[in-house]
Length: 173
Image 1 (cartoon, rainbow, N blue to C red):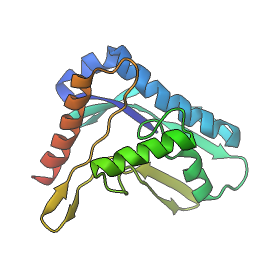
Image 2: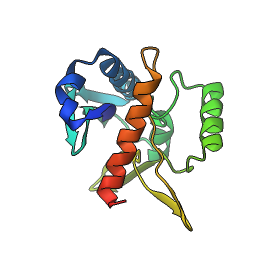
Image 3: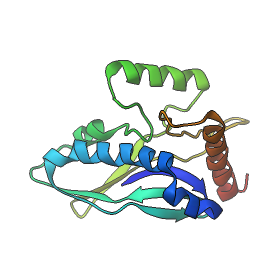
């Protein structure tokens, strides 16, 4: 799935028509379709708003029926990171810059890591874009946001706070 574009739940109607959030979501959805398209029969569902309690995201389901066996690790390398968590275009240079920023900001290496399982011959995977990391008395709640040309700093900081607050509320922190 493509999951990008975020708002508070009470701003659902505003999100549905927000051109910047739609464009941000489409970067992610189109990148996934592009990377999966040559592997088999691909079905892209309609973009909808997914309710996750205090926040909502744009969600587009994407499925591919592989024409041939593909190694799961190869599929993950092909897809990760998507533009929801990484640079576009994804090159060695842009990835090195992203990793340097994450290290400088103290983001856990596992932030945004793919996680999946094969069940009855079908692989289901997702990307861990929310979480809580702790070491001793230190607690970290990393969050990310998509930054495109139309982004505004104050709105992106607000989105980061919104995502962290949703995790805090879920865990009672």
